[in-house]
Image (cartoon, rainbow, N blue to C red; front, side, top):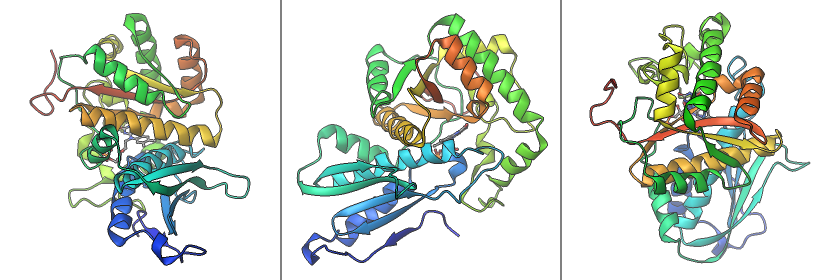
Length: 331
Ligand SMILES: Cc1cc2nc3c(=O)[nH]c(=O)nc-3n(C[C@H](O)[C@H](O)[C@H](O)COP(=O)(O)O)c2cc1C
């Protein structure tokens, strides 16, 4: 069963002239289907009616070991909402966005309504076109760091939708983050139940996962550099902590956090994450996301205290230039 399904509903009160044309529906479905999601579970559904497109969380998509509270599922849905928003703008409609969840719709991520004809801006067009090019880049980056202007641009995108974004800065912060990521990696590596579930979501050579959905490529987990502690498998060789701290200090690692820790905060974090990721892609940069360690409450607490964060951290996102040779090890 593909978790990527969308459902078309009758137009309700809409007149015929207000229906989305089939090509717009296809574009919205494809854009939402390209959003990043935890273990590539794509835990959402899309409902069309009149001139609206509504995105719902599929709470039944559960990762009991990896994501027992559904935090990542909701962040994934938020990322899909950003893609939906951009896809509607790309059709030339101005957009009204009503965010969920609501008291009667706890699974509502958001409703996007086309209100009047308005061409997308250049920036929206660039971000929309980046949707098909974005992917997780779990390899070390090129040693050239990001230009100041790129870091500022990414920070502005990550800090949208009411989410706080800041870079991990300096060697002391990098050491703190390395210590917390190293701790989480050791916990996850030796947890057999956790590892069994993770293995179910990794695809085999035929591209299939034994889990209930699409899954992700296990070969992608090269275990080198910072990403090695970003999704730790039973086979990951954990880096020495001092080296990990150096890698973190060399990369651009963004922390996304919110004042509170409600489902709506997770949705908003996903929106901001995807906006930053698409912005990076449109600039020719690459990125990968790290949430696995943040599923441990003590790691989130440690990040909050040691980095002096004002709110609850949800995601670490690393951004950089792609290395010229894939998988190239840095010196
Ligand atoms: C909420 C969320 C959490 C994620 N957590 C991790 C993570 O901890 N480590 C990792 O390597 N990738 C993580 N990912 C990346 C997903 O595995 C990836 O988006 C998915 O497999 C689809 O692949 P793609 O990003 O290349 O399209 C996460 C993605 C999302 C949206």
